[in-house]
Amino acid sequence: MAGHRFSVPRFEGVSQEQFIEHLYPQRKPLVLEGIDLGACTSKWTVDYLSQIGGRKEVKIHVAAVAQMDFISKNFVYRTLPFDKLVQRAAEEKHTEFFISEDEKYYLRSLGEDPRKDVADIRKQFPLLEGDIKFPKFFKEEQFFSSVFRISSPGLQLWTHYDVMDNFLIQVTGKKRVVLFSPRDAQYLYLSGSKSQVLNIDNPDLAKYPLFSKARRYECSLKAGDVLFIPALWFHNVISEEFGVGVNVFWKHLPSECYDKTDTYGNKDLTAASRAVQILDRALKTLAELPEEYRDFYARRMVLHIQDKAYSKNFE
Image 1 (cartoon, rainbow, N blue to C red):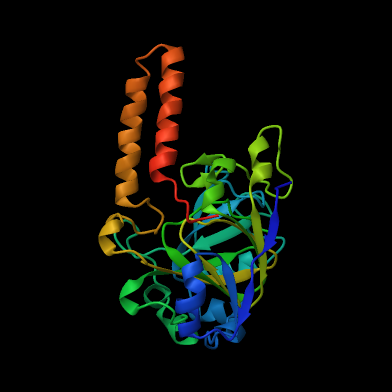
Image 2 (cartoon, rainbow, N blue to C red):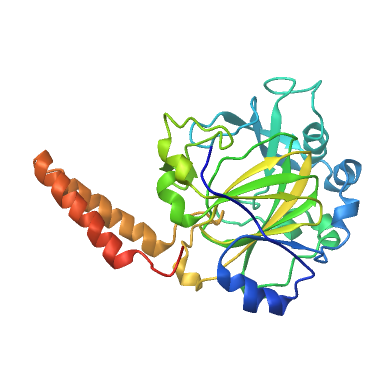
């Protein structure tokens, strides 16, 4: 099992001023209760969503197993009318299916042209716009996207990080969310922005021994809860019931820091991408040396990076 465990703190009736001045600067996850989210938490039933969403075609992930893995791609992409998706996602067993009668469905809404347009529930599902209110805890000009998500019961999404701050609004159903600090990235066996450790509750420590050192932060979300996920915090989401959620992402850094081609909010900052490219070139140069020298100078480079780039202001 993972090492130290912590509960994500919960706060009720937090004002915009309290959040911005006292909670937000701590750069840690927290759950907000009692936020006015509009009528969505009571209105967005299976029948209502099926009726309002209509026959609009949506692209979805379909998996034969509950633990979805973006690295090995253990799922397929399929298209369904929105009302059919909602009805199937709410079922435990299916009479109509793509892979198996107990397959899992996951919708992550997209822009009209995913290569150019960001997801915004107010544009892709305008008939639902009046039902939901976003927390007014950031400036309107900082808004990046609002992602509509629908999950089958039992579905587990892979552990990953995003480069923007976001609110995970749990509209209906229950979710369990496990988070890991950015400072524990070295224990998560990363492949890009994603962890290779799929089973976080019963990890293979023979294969992933360092995972036991990762600090685990956990919370349960019910309808009406809002989870603040700071940028770079790793998160793993398990839908304990059929659930509907909306992620609201915003730019907390100047716009020029972000990749202009990023429509998902998950491409590394432009300066970080340049630094990785430079590092790759340096490693290719080191490869020209004999093993003994390559090892020695690589260790010196690591120490140099730690000395010059690691922050002493974080846990």
